[in-house]
Length: 213
Image (cartoon, rainbow, N blue to C red; front, side):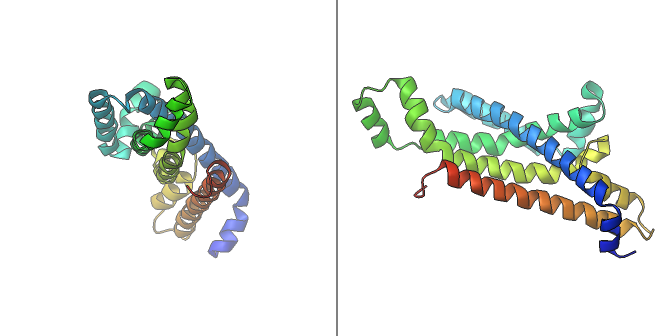
């Protein structure tokens, strides 16, 4: 059977796995964003806590994906919870790095003007510093999303959802006629999810940032 014939024959599975892939990546990205941006807001102007927080997420990022998924089997078992936990930790590094850079890089002149207008420190933070940092934060979210889309494929090794099922089933069946079609279908699915992610972030950037950003 040709690849396109295989894809038509397994179209329902292709769509279901795509929705699963989107769900696990979307959930992980949301959790990583909440934790990463929230922690960055707490430490961006404190040198020692900032360095410590970034060091911790950097060390976690160096752990091989497969090893972390296996380590989580004991506390979290097999399945999507395990994958979401691992992806959340991996997504925090690019999100935190960009959030810290964005928050620390706010134009001092603009902040001074905000103080001159009588804004409190909290108002300056939410109405001036965060909006100025948003384009840089958004870049971190975009990078994290693309990274997690790829790593999520490994989740099938611990019975996680997504296109990893096609990829690893194909690898397990190397030497059979269907093996290559399965791997190609999985790779195509991951590429399409990545393309959708890029389109969504491009749209979000246009809707939430000034043209000059």
